[in-house]
Length: 160
Image 1 (cartoon, helix red, strand yellow):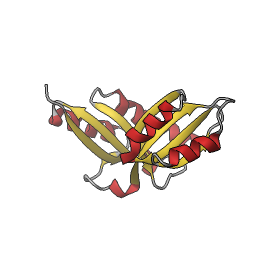
Image 2 (cartoon, rainbow, N blue to C red):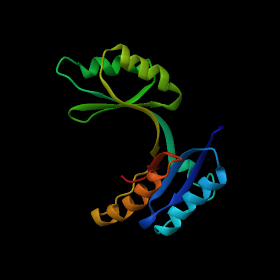
Image 3 (cartoon, rainbow, N blue to C red):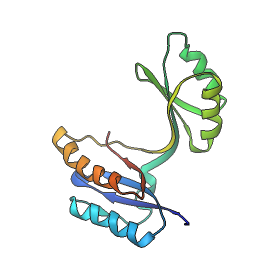
């Protein structure tokens, strides 16, 4: 079986922007499924490339924070491996870098002996949008249905 990677871009309820990454052995089936999910959930597909400028591909690595860890030292070390930004989330730290630095950055974090909880290239919205709790609930119905499709690998939004 040969798989093809496909990207679909769309708008959901309340104008949320959605980027869907798929891997499929049947492009026609996948396109039909994705289009149906959007159409039945107050959304629609956009022309290919329509959202390209709205999202930036980044390396995202998350690791557990411990008392023995000096975050400033880690930050200085990771700058040489493509670190752009580091965010302290309390119990965990999130590291952002250029998409092309994913291998180097994740290897450096691993070699430091840090416990990685998540490491993946992601599409980050350049401008996040705010939605009310009720709007988020309506949007999540669409997102859940997209993620339920076997061909869908990742779903990214501009929810801020």
